[in-house]
Length: 496
Image (cartoon, one colour):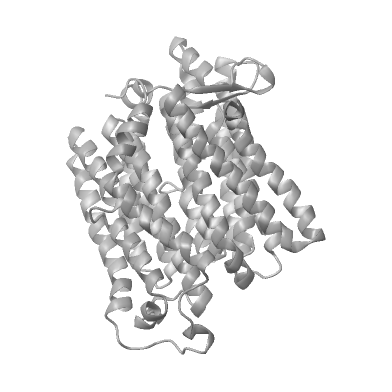
C-alpha cells in the first residue's frame, strides 16, 4: 500500500520537485510554477493521508533500505509528527498558490530559483519532523537552513545583509547542535532517538549527557529564535520578499520548536529535563521574558513587517513557555499554538503581500481607510488574525493561550499568568492602531493611481489569505477536537 511509504514520499516529492523545476525552468520558465505547485500538493496530500493513517493505525516506523535501527535510519511518524508535518506542507501548499502573482510583482525574473529553493526548504522541514535519527535531522536542518538564507537574500536591497547575519547565527546554531550530538554519540554509541531514549536512563555518569543536551538546546534555541537568541529574526522577516516571509514566519521556527520537544521529552525524558536538572525551568523563564520583550518591541515599530517580526519573537515565547512548563496542559498549549500561530502569521504576512501588491507600502503611518475600501476582504482577514493574536474568543489564539494559563496555574506559577495577560494587552495596542487606521482614520495618506483603484488582489492571492483567516476561526471553534483526537495522543510519557 503506497500510503505506508508516506514518510519518505513527503520529502522525496519535494526534493524531486526542486531538482526538476530548476532545469526545466531554465528551458521554459512558465513550467517552473506548475511543477513546484504539483510537488507541493503531493507533499500536502501525503501529509494529510499520513495523519489519517497514524490516527487509525498508531505510530508508523519506516526503515530506509530495510536496515533495522540503530544501524539503519528510521523515520517515525506518530500523532505529533504527523500533525506538524501536515502544518508545514499545508501552509507550504497554499502559500505556493499565493506566490505566483506576488513573486512576479516583487522579484520578477527570479521565480525559477525561488520556487526550487522553496521546495528544498519544505523538504528540509518535513524531513526534520519525520526522521527518527538525530544525525539525519541535522542533515535536513542544514537543507532547510541554507534554503531559508536564500529566501531572505532575494528581498529588498538590505536583504543580503540580513541573510548573511541569519547565516552566521544559523551556522553557529547548527554547530552547537552537531557538537552536542557528537557528545551524545560518544556516551551512548547511537544516533537513533528511541535507542538513545532507552540508553540514557541506564548511564551512571551523566556529565557528557548534560553537556550534550545543553549544546543541542542552545543550537535549536538559535534556530527557533527563542529569546535572547532571536537577533537574526527581525531583519530576516522584514527584508525578505512578502512570500519569503510568509514561508519563514509560520513554519520555520515552529519546526525547531518541534525538534526541541522531541529532544527534551522523547530522547531525554520529562523527568530528566524537568526534575533532575531543571532545563525546562530555564526555557520557561527565558520564554516569558521573550513574550514581553517581543510585544514591547512590536509596539515601537512603524513598519508592518518589522512589527510582525517582533511579534513572532513574542509568539515563539508562548510555545517555549508551554514546553518549559513540562506538564500536559503546557504541552497542549505549546503544540496548539504551533498550529494557531502558523495560521495567524501566515494570514498576516499574506495581508502584507496583498497591501504591497496594490499599494507598494509597508509603513504603518501610511495606512488609512483607503486600504479597507480598496482591499475590504484583505482588511477583514487582517482583523480576524489580529483579534486571534490578541486572544479574543472564539478565535484560535485564545485557546492556546488559555491552555498556557491553565498550565501555569497548575504549576502554581502566577507570574506566567500575569505575563500572558500583559502580553495580550500589549498585542491589543499594536494591532488596534492598525485596525483604527483601517476602519476609523479618515485622512488619506495614499495617492491612488488607476491601478490601485482596482478592487482587491487577484483571486489566487485572495483565496489563500481568506482561507487562513477562516481557519483561524474554524480551528478556534473546533479546537477541542484537535486537542482530544490528536494532541492528547502525543503527550509524552512521564508528563504529569
